[in-house]
Amino acid sequence: MKCILLADVKGVGKKDDVVEVSDGYARNFLLKKKLACEATADNMNKNKLKKGSEAEHARRELEEAIANGKKLDGQTVKLAVKTGEGGRLYGAVTAMDVADAIQKAGFAVDKKNVTIKNPIKSCGTYEVTAKLHTKVSVKVNVEVVPEE
Image 1 (cartoon, rainbow, N blue to C red):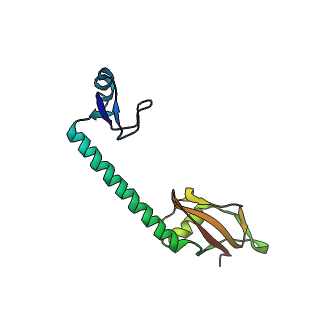
Image 2: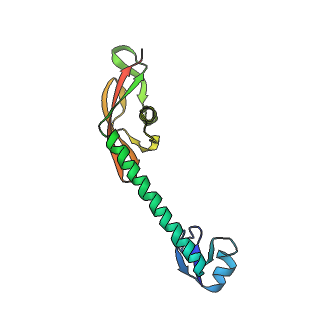
Image 3: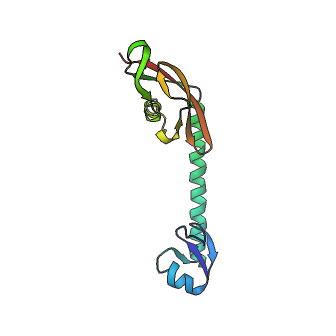
């Protein structure tokens, strides 16, 4: 029986795949647990339209990330932090601090997508990498200045 998977099924396929499985497996497991639906002509058309709209959405998301990457690449973001004697910081600047500073500049970046090569423990200018999309990474300069 041909089925369209509604969720990832281990050993069978991924969501939205059209797979051929035995009738008993389809009726007694996949259809009962709502992991799949029958691959009728109507369901196949719905699946095709859904895949097309998802591809369009992913393409728009990538274009937006590329546009934001061009604006953000090479920009300097200021980060004011508490310092002790000699410009040493209390603690280190984290990826979350950098992500917050980039968000204040008007760009959406998650803290998990900010990479700092070496720990930032003193004032100065540092280069970090921000990943805006799976295919778009940009270099951002972070200027760490003492808080007034």
